[in-house]
Image: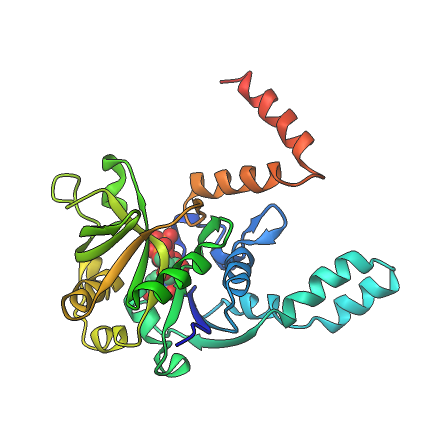
Amino acid sequence: MKVRKAVIPAAGRGTRFLPATKAIPKEMLPIVDRPTIQYVVEEAVNSGVKTIVLITSRGKSGIEDHFDLAPELESLLQKKGDQKTWQEVHALAGMCEMISVRQQEQKGLGHAVLCARQAVGNEPFAVLLGDDIMDADPPVTAQMIRAFEEFGGSIIGVLNVPREQVHLYGAIKGKEVKPRVHRIERIIEKPSAEEAPSTIASTGRYLFTPRIFDFLEDQAPGRGGEIQLTDAIDRLAKIEPVYALEYQGLRFDAGEKIGYLRANLHYALKRPDLSAGVKELIREFSKKI
Ligand code: UTP
């Protein structure tokens, strides 16, 4: 069955970015001149996704507005004759169908994904975390869809991370079935460096068969008292094949400050209108350190 839907959980509180995120969703903080979540939505759409199920919470309606028409702004841009900006702004509303679901209490990522159950229905679906940006060609979600078509089971996007960072992720125990593809035996949320079964870590991209919802439905709270997606994946892997794909591409964790700054530098350097200025800035700051 084709993967047509993607869930983007974006209901978290973004406490690591306070006070910036007191009134603005962290997913709306700009990477250069586009909100973080726009990169994520574009990845899904460029991977063939037709419907996005956005999981939001109170105070985050700015995300929905960003992907809606803005008639006053658009007519202003047209009056000014700024066709290029108009096109960019206008296109945001027509990228895909967007369904928005409120997660009323922030009970954890697993619970956020469960909130999409009705909107997703009985079909495979992708999950892209709203603050994880991937720069890859083909897009990481497209790589995962390809692996899903080949292996037929749920897929977790993974990277091999330094052991001293593994405590920040879900780490897998698995068997390599093909270069860069592992069949998962276990996945453990935020293990210590000593207890981590490997340094292969889950990094914000997933592709699930709808069976995951059955496990999320009765998943007990885990680490931090939150309903953890990782715990439900661990149970799913015991009854049907779940794979980890070491995807090709660069990942930016825009949900924490250094990752956010790194993403800004990376995308600014790629921009023909900005790269010379950014290189100049880097030279200036390199002299100070
Ligand atoms: P994070 O832990 O990175 O997001 O969750 P957070 O809770 O907003 O961050 P901090 O720690 O307070 O700064 C990973 C993803 O899961 C979503 C977040 O929006 C983010 O995209 N999430 C998390 C939910 O949608 N609901 C939740 O209950 C928890």
